[in-house]
Amino acid sequence: MRLEDRPAIEVQLACSGCRGEVALALPGAGEAARCGRCGRETRARVTEAMRERRVVDECPVCGCEDLYVQKDFNRKIGLAIVVAGAALAPFTPYYSSLFAAAAIDFLLYLVLPSCTVCYSCKSVIRGNEKNPAHAAFDIHVHERYRRTGSEGGPSDAG
Image 1 (tube, rainbow, N blue to C red):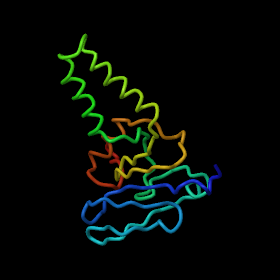
Image 2: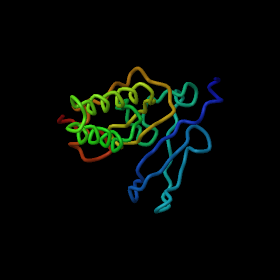
Image 3: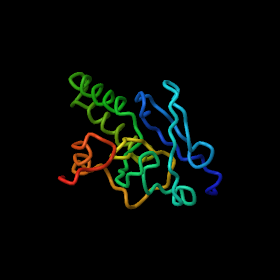
C-alpha cells in the first residue's frame, strides 16, 4: 500500500478548555479541530517527518519530544478479562480460567496495533509508522512530567 493511500494519522486529545475529547486527522485538512463540547479550536503541528514518512517525531499537540509506545487497547476491557478469569478460577479445574485469561491477553497483545502517547499532554496518536526513538512507557520520564503538573515539560530539578 502506497503511503498516500493509507488512512490519516489520528490524534486523540483532551480539549484545553473543557477537557472534552477532540480528534484530529493528520496531515491535511484535519490539522485543526473544534471541540464539540465548548467550541474551542485546537491546531496541530505537522512536522516534515509526519507529512512525508508518517513518523511522529514530536507531539503534534504540544510539541513535546518525549513520547512512548503502547498497545492500543482499552484498559477497562483488559481488567474485565482478568477479573472474569479470577472470578471463575475457583469453579474451573486447576484454576484454568486464569490461564485462559492470560492466553486471551497474549493473543490480543499479538494482534492489536500500537499507538504513540505523549508524556506531557497525554495525546494518543494512531496510524503512524513506528519511530525507533520511542520506547515503552518509562516511569522515570513520567514522573518528571507529573511533578510539574503542566504541559510545559519536565522541571529542571528532576
